Image (tube, rainbow, N blue to C red; front, side, top):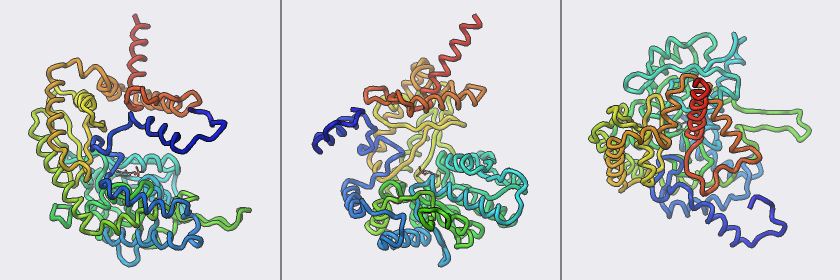
Amino acid sequence: MDELPARGLPHDEVLRRMEALREGDADWRGGRTWSLVYHGGEAHEAFLKQAYGLYFAENGLNPMAFRSLRRFEADVVRITARLLGGGADAAGCMTSGGTESCMLAVKTARDRALARRRWPGTPELLAPASVHVAFGKACAYFGVKLVTAPLGRDFRVDVAAMRRRVNRRTIALVASAPPYPHGVVDPVEDLARIARRRGLPLHVDACLGGFMLPFVERLGHPVPPFDFRVPGVTSMSADLHKYGYAAKGASVILYRDLSWMEHQFFVSDSWPGGVFASPALLGTRPGGAIAAAWAALHAAGEDGYLRRAREAMETTRALVDGINTIPGLQVLGEPTMSVFAYRATDPAVNIYAVADRLEARGWHVDRLQRPDALHVMVSAAHTGLEDRYLGDLRDAVDEVRRDPALATSGAAATYGMISAVPLRGLVKRQVLRMMMELYGPSGRPLDVEAPRDDLASRAGLALVKLREAWRRRRG
Ligand SMILES: *Cc1c(COP(=O)(O)O)cnc(C)c1O
């Protein structure tokens, strides 16, 4: 099917083939995935498709051509800024997702820094070790060095360690509300104090929490100050396509005021294609994603988001309490909202083997490292699944305890291998090899029939082989 057909196929035939190909995909409708998809229900999905469809062809590139789109974007930005404690001066724009928002925050901080004085060496971005990998990517793309500070025992960043790492090359600090791995909101107030004293920007990455924490707070749960209400927070990112329950391709980057955002814009006056100005990374911007985000906010309203947040928090409570009562397992820290991780406290329980056994029971599991743990991200789609997950988890732990061989087979073996490899460069090189295989000319390794695994476990497998070959050579 990988050749352009000489004659076009009937639409129903094309759609039939697509349906057949997706059969092996992760079952998100059944609540079996814990990230990747934030499902607001069938009716909401149908509504979003309608809104998206209205603007299927429109392009957000030129705000003058499609003024309604510019209006939607401005509304979405205002609504988000209000939710996050922004004042009348708050400014921002929509982006294609969290990664673009975070990358823009880094680019803007870098350009602001470089515009102010001669910079002594490579600009540095200072962030907690738990910061989203999008910041690592941004630094790699924009010639910035990512400097990280370790986490404390409660999985919040060690504030003193952050303070010690500020120097003349620092362009900005980052905090997360909450960080993806463990879901414990960083001490934003403490970090904002450091940033203010040094005259540095502080970006709060609320990609996950932006459309959750304001409602969690209103429901009466303890939420530490994390947004523009904290003096010193200069920019924020919030993903509409996560807990905003919008269509994919929608996030917001916000600044306290235009004086911070100014350094984000790009203008060219010499291109033969004309004078060109762009607020963010993309050129052509899908109108559908912007329109669907506007629609999602207005259709849900405050009561809709409160209801979803309440449901997610109740499910989270049940899961956290349930996991903590399973002997040998422990939730990491005190999760602030509906994102958390758990690890094994019993050496007889290999947590990656537990993940394998959960996958055998149909759950799609995200694995963490440093420390080894499994990830849970609860959304509205998980209501009612608590008992099934906890039951399967209990069975999985029992199985792993009974059969130690499970820790040295399946993906558990390769993950164990990865965390045991002393030279991390080796892992990186192997994963890069897998990427070349995946995207290269002969790269069709993701056939529907192929076993479901991920790049990391493939890379681990390659490392296991490497080690075996090395042992054989040594005799
Ligand atoms: C998801 C996420 C991002 C990146 O967002 P994408 O939409 O996946 O590009 C950044 N930060 C945090 C905390 C996230 O959870």
